[in-house]
Structure formats: structure tokens, C-alpha cells
Image 1 (cartoon, rainbow, N blue to C red):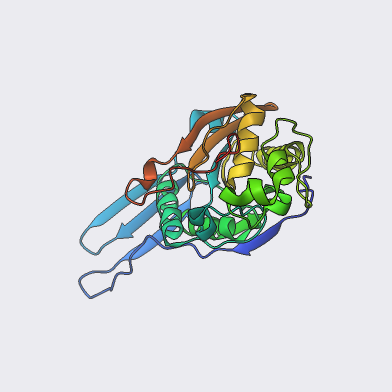
Image 2: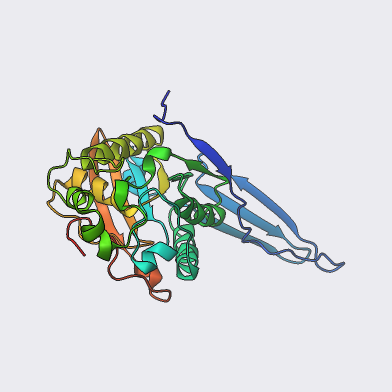
Length: 284
């Protein structure tokens, strides 16, 4: 049995129905039958009419990789927040999705609802991630969002609540530690080191992957966590910009991670997003 280090909490989502209500009359009798095949991959929708029989089927098609034992994890950065837009450092402090962020969450949900079926939605326990995850869960027919505290953003110590432009002047030691290449350094003011962030993030992700072997799941998290995951998997020197509401897909099989796609924001073409994103590799 798998356990998450700091426990998990489940919050209920209310799936949105994609089916319309029909009024039955003397000349139009509709009987709707919904049933899944034994592997839960094929949904049959049968509409029987008095004068006509119609059968429509949707198949939730899983990729060959997922069928063969690969866990596919769709990593999503939460939608834009008021502090993102203002250039303010969040860390583990709370900041609500702004109007654009809410629209981004809807756009992500619409996109993922049309892709291969996901069997579960996980989220950081910070509100901006949970709110994004709930919108996704409602559209993807997942009845709940499972909160994982270890998926929360990095604690950045005394930088939290400051504006990026004032960080170097007001908290020079913390600012320097945040951008340091010495990954073991903890950020003054109760912050985490990058090594600590990587350890908890990858541990949580690996446990999710092992729990869902051969399945597809969605994980909503933060820019700092995504950066840690990318650098741990690729061993690259930089992760580049991590954009709000981006979709990032990784595969896990036989103790190995592979990045399938990264920083995809094609679903935001009509909504927009902050071009600067989150960049933990270079100072603003």
C-alpha cells in the first residue's frame, strides 16, 4: 500500500453533464442507457426512439504507451493569480485566481475533457491549484480532487509576499539563496532548499505514478514544482519559463521518467497568458 508522506485529502467535485434533457411526448419516447465496458474505456450512449434507433458511442482512447504499463501524468500549472499579475512572490502564501486565471482553468478543462480519459485528478493543497483542479475534475468526469501537500509550491522564506523587483534590496540573503546554484542552501526565513523541494516533489509524483500504472492522471501544481520535476528528469541546467495554465506531460515506466511534451499553451490562444511566466533560473 502506498502512503503520501503528509497525507492526502479528498475534495468532491461535481461533474458537469454533457447530456441534454429531452422531453418525452407521445410521438417521441427516449430511453437513455449508459454503461461502461469492463475495462472502463468505452462509454455507450444508446437512444431508443419510437420510430428511429440511434446508437452513438464515445471511446476514451488510451495511447499504446499507457496501455502497455506506462503511467501518463498530465502536469498542469495553476491559472494566473492576482499576485502573478502584480509580480508578487507567492511561495506558499495564498493568492486567488484572477479573471484571466479562471478563464485559463476553463480552457484547460475543456481541452483535457476532450483528450484521453484521466482516471484521477490530484492537486497541491494551495487554493489556486485546487480551484484550477476542481474545474478540470468537473469537466473530466472525476468526482473528486485528491490533495497532496507535497505538491505545494516551494517555501521561499522571507521573500514571500514581496514584489520580485524589491526582493534583492529588502531580503538580499534570501534573494541570493533562491537563485543560488548551491541547491542545498535553505532560504532564510523558514524557506526550503532546492534539494528539499526536488525530493518531496519527485517522491509525491513517483507514488502517484506507481499507484496508477497503465493509467492517465492529472496533477495540478506550481511553477517551482514543475521546474524541479523538469530539472530532475532531464538533468538540464535550465527549465526556462513555466507558464500559467500550461500542460506538461510525463511518462513513468520501470522506475524511469520521460518527458512527452512540455509547456504547451495552445489551448490559451483565445484567453492569453503572462509571457514572463515563472523563471527560477534567471533574476527578473
